[in-house]
Image 1 (cartoon, rainbow, N blue to C red):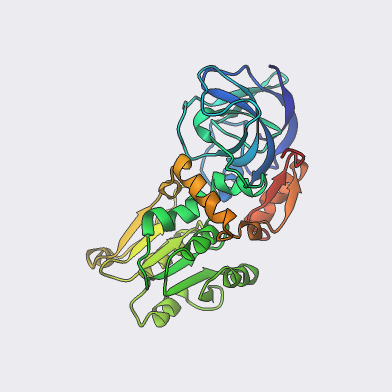
Image 2 (cartoon, one colour):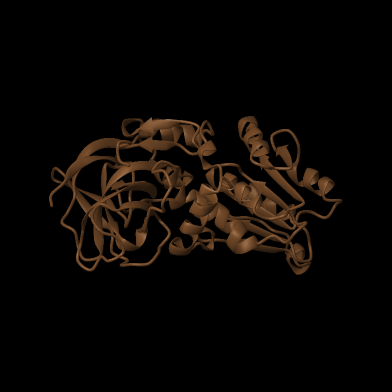
Length: 351
């Protein structure tokens, strides 16, 4: 099945993405063709487009790693889904074939892509990057299940697992941070402290259950957290701001003798964090996580049930919706903190 469609393509770092027509290759074994309904936008795409990951040897290429859509065609050996199924697309590997990247055609040029892209009207996707859409989950909200939710909520549910009465701080209230905050409501935490520099996000955090918010542009968040916890620091600190200094702050705000700092952010390539080793031998722990330790087949259905029960008010994350032609504006808004999680409407008619 030959399909041509519009896609956002990155040709040069620090330059706008180009909307152009590309042609999908024939499906290989383990691949499927999906017609996209919606895509989310993650800071990872800002990093890619703005050169934050260093030199890019795959240019030109397509972007996007969380979305929703409908399966149009399946390749040989695909058993996880069938034609007509509604699916979530995400970067975290699940069950099924793990195929190589895809090479699309745009005239005489080759456009590279990984195992999943979502800034496009159609996508050739590896079987292990899709999960059947759970019943009762809207197609727009579903994009959050491709990245923000399994990472943010996964940190709390799969890694921290806070005990009753625990204290917890979240540094950075983007999609991952807000997802983590929502997941905290599933546990009997004594304090849930939200840290950011944007008043609108701090207001949202209060509405979503934070017991205290800290504007880090006004006061030192580490000193304030120590004051709030009797000088001890929090049991758990979660960092998702994407800045090395904030990872360091989150670690400093974690208590000694068993406290855990978990970070999921991706600072610019080449940057390093500096930690006091004495704090480590005093029992503080720091841990990075790959996707919140989530397993799509297990965790997406669990999180969908929490959404259906009203325990995850995910709609609050979408502060603005964009068309595919507005992808560069969406990236700019996310980079400059004018949007929590941009939602790209590719074909909202898909249900």
